[in-house]
Image (cartoon, rainbow, N blue to C red; front, side, top):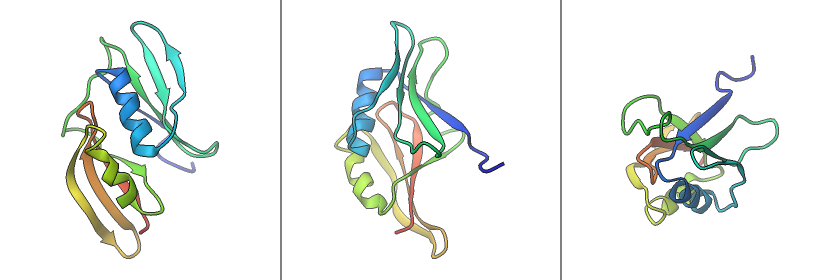
Length: 125
């Protein structure tokens, strides 16, 4: 096994708002692979061999966990400060500013996205 994490999905209450948030955060155009009335899925950036994820809208099945539940770290290399400065203008909220985990493990920050999901950012510097 290469990685414990294989795929992740972030609930979106408002798909358009969530898509705009992550497009702004990562400065890219999100491909939408499912676009039905009651089920939508947009892919987050990932290299071909990397663990990927998506934002997902489905009124009966996906609900944000708020500040409870698992904490997913998104890759913000080379410096998470660049991504973190986009969080609040895009509609999120910074909960923990950039801080060093250790010299070996780099830096982290925690935020909530436009949908209320609690997530973290990680970078080596």
